[in-house]
Amino acid sequence: MTKKLFARILLFGGLVLLLALFAWEACAEDLTVVEVRSNIPLSEKDQVFHDYYINSGSNQGLKQHLVVTATRKITVRDATGTQTYGDMMVPVGQLKVIFVGEKFAVAREVKLIGREDEPMIEQTGIMIGDKVDLKASFVDNHKVPSQKSAEKARVNEPKASPIATAKPEPAAPAPTEQKAVEKTTENIPSPEGEVEKTAEAVEDAAI
Image (cartoon, rainbow, N blue to C red; front, side):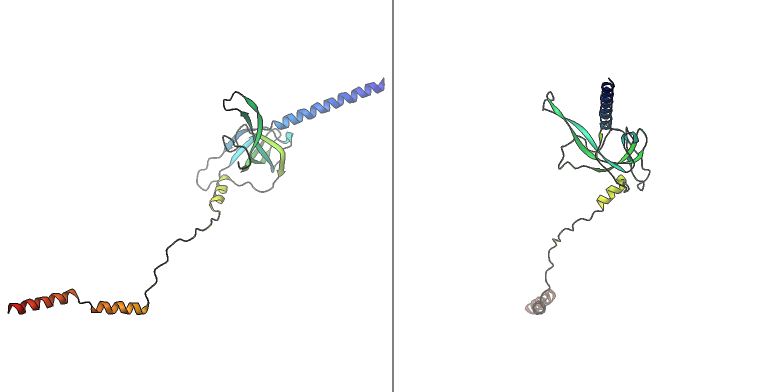
């Protein structure tokens, strides 16, 4: 009798533990971006930050400097929108946790994931409603750059200098050719001299 009771207690305890694990996994999958806040810069020197608020914190294993992946649920339908084929979770970008509370956390954007090897999304950038995936999370102790400094880094990237296409300057004439040109110009009578000779010829004919 005692063995059967003990076996039932173990079985009941195992079921409770299994249900607790399933519930924990279900809650872990519900990590979501619930709000996005950004500061208003008062001058060009002020840095721009975007804070992404997550609806779970240390109670779901989040900690400071943890880099997580923001994903978006995409429903696949046919062209008419009547037939649904299923859902897929598409990665959007990476977030780094900068503050952790018991039931919420604040993160900032590390980078956006390119669409070269990922399905297209209608709206780029991390937004409210995106899910937070902890499967590929890792700890990064580097400082998260602001959006303004990141844009400056892209602008200041070295660019390849274009190949010069300027036409070569014409070569100077050789000394012998230059002398020949000068002699030719010396032998050409000036217009003033021709006018004087013509006037003298008219006066002689008149006499």
